[in-house]
Structure formats: structure tokens, C-alpha cells
Length: 365
Length: 231
Image 1 (cartoon, rainbow over the protein chains, first blue to last red):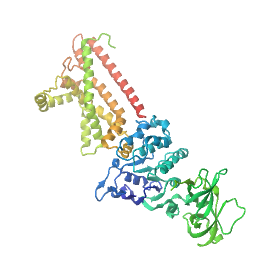
Image 2 (image 1 turned 90 degrees about the horizontal axis):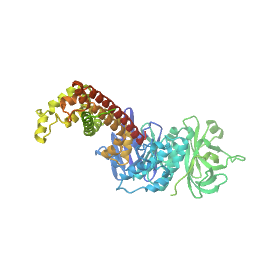
Image 3 (image 1 turned 30 degrees about the horizontal axis):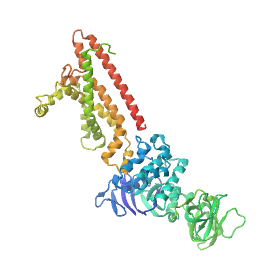
Image 4 (image 1 turned 180 degrees about the vertical axis):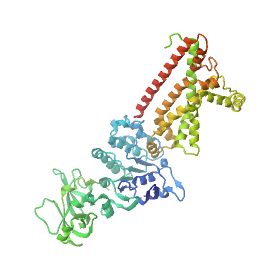
């Protein structure tokens, strides 16, 4: 476990955060710009000292202001992938990669040099200088460099923020592969919920220097405070299912979700794969009777758990769909027309294609 | 350039090169240290140290030479001590000429080095910290290489300026042919001597040529290093 409990004031900004990041795991520090995420990760790395507080990695105390303990950043053995890569311009890619490796002699390696180069596709780039690399390539080198320094924990500060969508798509799979192959714990700063969805197991929600909530991704996706931050368009329950059937021509698959099945757009997953997906509330339709002749492929029997106003004039309905919790966003008019009450049985309709881009394979186990 | 080098000219040339080279070689580490302290270290009186380092740039060179005599002349407090314990006497020696040149060109070096130090991205040093590099390691592996253009520019500028140092050298080290009579001193002496016009002219041309070469070399070197550093 990484225990963090710190407070720090910088000018008019004040950060006060207490959270735990389970290890192993990928913990996302999620929030808007300016919410204090980077300050927090710099405190964990030891690049900043808190005004007061404690940071512990397992049994080891890294920072304790009461006892005057402050382990220097260079001794914390935490890899850090910065937003701007920060590659050393006077060294080649290989020189950059080996920089941390050379200074980590006594520690157990996380990954071998050749393996890292292969995993991140860096072989053709080794003798180049950073200025000859694209943004995506630089971030991959930065990742490799951090991993080769034999870290106990990997810190990432919005590593894809400075990349355009195409570059991002280039790099994210590497990070996913790293997460799955190496099981190195990560603390990951992001303001993009899709990234969180793809990578994180745990979310710490930050806003204006305060931790609003923390918990597993699935649980947090139902949290109204998260919803307030991501906005109404991105509200949606995150659920986990197992692939039970494939439709390769269509590029879709059937997932076992709770006690029901869900047909989703998912081109690459094999049978038995665990899949995490977000069902956007705006794409969920409710029906009080079974419907015929609709293009929607998924009509799941469900029960209304609760109904609440979302902050944007519509209504969020929380549903029990065969054991999984799903959110639907409907208008007030619809609510009245259907006269929905908690406890009502309804059909939950989900378009298979609406899951495109929101379904991700999870590592086995 | 020079068609008929005489021993006087060659002496002056070699002496100038020797003195300027020594002056740069011995003060370069000190200049790096001074640049570091003035840029990265906070302490009361920093502004005063800054002014002190730059003093030779604004003082008359003769005054600087005279001050050196007051401190390091053989009968002066520090000079006498050096003479008694190490047998070192600086006035009238090439070493003395080098020292006077060094003092005069020190601020030039410090300025150039400071500029490049200020331009070193602290974020890179932070990255080095996260990779396990402690402070001295970071300085040698990251900061120093990135400061290299500034250090080189400072060194070459100081060297070129050192070739031309007159007032401080002649006041402190005197005008001993073959020992402290550098190019500018030789030129001055030739002008003062009857029939020395031709020599004076040749020495002047030589000085110009050296100055030009020095600047060109400096620029080319700095560009080379910049490319290596990826700028």
C-alpha cells in the first residue's frame, strides 16, 4: 500500500489529500486541471516537500514531517514519466535508457534492457538523439528509461497530454502491455476518464486540492462527484464482463454480465477474456414493456434501484441488471411518462455499437 | 599577414598565447564555481559578490594591476608570505602576467557561463533525480554538459580578450621582453622606439588577425557543441 496524507500550500492554492493506493494496482489521480494532481505526484516522488504530512510505501516511511523524515527523491526508487518526456538532449536514446539503470545497481530489475526495448518498440531508435524523435517516440523512451531505473513504483503525470490523438493511440497500448506484463504498481495522473478506464484499477478523485472520493473504478463510476467532474456526456457505469461468444465478421462479442449477456462491439478479444466497459448513461434506453422490432440488440431485464437528478437538468436512473449496476440518463418528461419508481421492473436497452471505444480487455487474474 | 617574422614578434606572439592560455586554464574552474554560486545559491550578500566579480570590467586596467601589486608585490603582505614560504614572486614573471590577465578576463567568463547555466532546464535535473542521480552526479552528467556551449564561449572570449590585455599586465608584471612583453606591450614598446614603426604595424596586423581567428573559432566551436547537445 502507498499511504499518502499530505497538505501543501502554494500561493493561493492549498492541497490537502489523504488516500491509499493499493499495490499492486494502477491508481489514477483523476481531476480537472489545477486540482492539485501534479503537486500531489511531485510530493510522492519527493520532488516537493509537504508543509505537513506523511507518505509511506508499505512499511517504509518516505516522508514524515512530525519526525523530520524526508527521503530524497533520488533515493525513493520511483520511476517518473513526465508530461513532457524530459529526455536528456545530449544523450542518445540508449544513453537515456541506461541513465537510470546505471544508478540502480543494487535494486532488483523490473525488466531487462532488451526486453524493454522490444516491448516499447525502441530498437530502430537507439542511436538517435531526442530531437530526432516524435512526441510518441519520446514518451516511449521516457517510459523505458523510468522502468529501467528499477523502480518500486511508477509515477506518470498525464503522459499522453502532450500527444495528439493518433500519437496517444500509438503509446497507450504499450502502457497497457506494461501494466499487464510487469505488474508494476502505478500512480497515474489524468484528466481523461477514458485513460482511467483503460488503465486504472483504483481512482482517487481530486478537485481544488481536496480528495472527494476514492475507490475501485467500477464503484467510482457511480459516484455523483465523479459525474460532476466528467460532465453529463461521460457519465456511465463501468462494468466487467467475460467474453462468452465471438462474432468475428461483425467485430462484436457477447459478454456475460452479471446473470445476463450483453452484445458489444469488441473486435479483438478472445473467448474467456475479461473485459471492462463503460456503458454511457446517455446511450442507455429504458422500457417498461418488452419491445419488438427495434434495432437495439440488448434488452436486459432489470430493476430500478434509485432515481436522482443529475446536475444538468436530466435524471439518472440507477438499475440492477442481473447483478451489475448500470446508469441511464433520461429526461424528466420520460420519467413522468413512464412513472418510474424504485423497485420497478424495466427493460434496459443498450446499443451494441455504443460500446465502441469504451470496452477494454483486462489482464487475466 | 606576417611575411618577415622576427624574434621580437615571435616572442610576443608565443608569450601572448602562453599567458592567455594559462589565464583561462586556471580560472575556468573558478569561473564555473562563481557562476554556480551566483545563480543557484541563495545567501545574504550575493549581490555584493556579484558586483565584486564584475569589478575588473569597470575598473581601469592599470588600477587593477596596481591593486595586484599592493597585494602580491614582493614586499606586500600576501606577496611577501608567498615569497617566504614558496619562493613565489609574481611581478616581472610570465605567471604574473597570466594572473593579471586572468583577473581582467574573469568577469567575461563568469557572465557567459552564468548565461548558459541559467538556461539549463531544471526539469531535466529533476528527471535525473527521479532516476537516482545525487547532486554531484547530476552536475557532472546533466548540468555541466548542457552548460558546455557557455563554458566554451566564455573560455574562448576570455582567451581572445586576454591576448589583448595591456594595462594590468604592464602595471603588475612589467614589460620584460621574452617574459612579460605580450603582443600589446610589444606594440606599445615598438611605437615608443625610434624606427619601430614597421614592427608596430606588423604587430598590429598580427593582433587583428588573432582576434578575428579567435572569434571565428569560438563561434564554430559553440555551434558544433550546440548541435551535439541537440539544440
